Image (cartoon, rainbow, N blue to C red; front, side, top):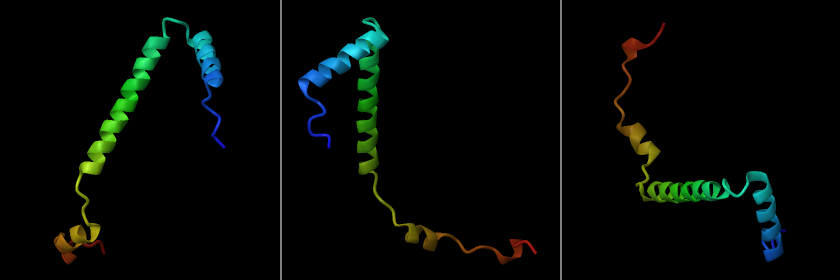
Length: 73
């Protein structure tokens, strides 16, 4: 489905449309912003995968029992 999407001619057309829409002064800023966003996404994914996973059932078992006197009547 997406096999021929990023052919050189397609990329040139996309770049030309972006140049017309944003102008030559805004394109470097736009590229910088996209690059920083991708970099932050990769950094966040690395941090998320580096965190140790916890077992939810272990957290529930280690919680103190509820006080029955605090229940609403």
